[in-house]
Length: 294
Image (cartoon, rainbow, N blue to C red; front, side, top):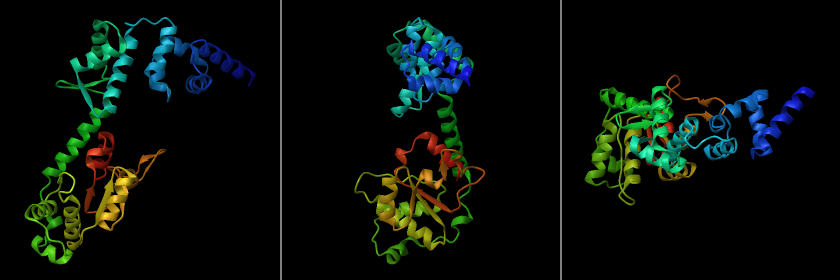
């Protein structure tokens, strides 16, 4: 309608005055509608949370043109979230307070007092989670706690009937035609006895051979085995090494962008044993979703 066109035009002109591109202005209008001007004026930093593609730096540049001060609490809060996200990109799921303050000071070039005040407010309102010295963004906190609890539950479950028809691991060499050394045999035995096992070792230490032995032992016991890896390339390598289909974790969990993970605590994976390669590449959010489906 003409009225709507007028609204869009006003929003575009207003935002372009602060250096916002037409593409982002259109996204902002789609999100906020005719309240766009009011909302952006009220807190330009909300753009970093609400609009895909607009990060803290873009929001900060808009805010600065609107006359926001460096020490504004809204700016400090947004900067703290940005800092924690940057640390997450480097592989840290949390930061300790002094490390976080130091990084936020560098980013914001603000005074320390408002940064500490903003941090205290965010902890109070549970926009951040704190455990001991660690400060988390909530998604990482819940993913870490969820993963831990699920692992502990699995470890506490008795080493039970699933593996009752245990095979003689020594006889495995005859069946597979592979000679295993003492440590490999120990690992295979541990794998068929335990609910959870981590197999680790540098390149060329025999992880693949050991994994093949574990698969042979589990097959001998008549168990259904699922294989997965975090990336397509790792899954392909795993398939080639084992002669069985390995899926990416996303495909295993039947992920789609619209509905998320179809395999979860209410619809768990169907199988008796799961072997995941390259576990160190899995981020905590994906790991939590995987653990939910086991």
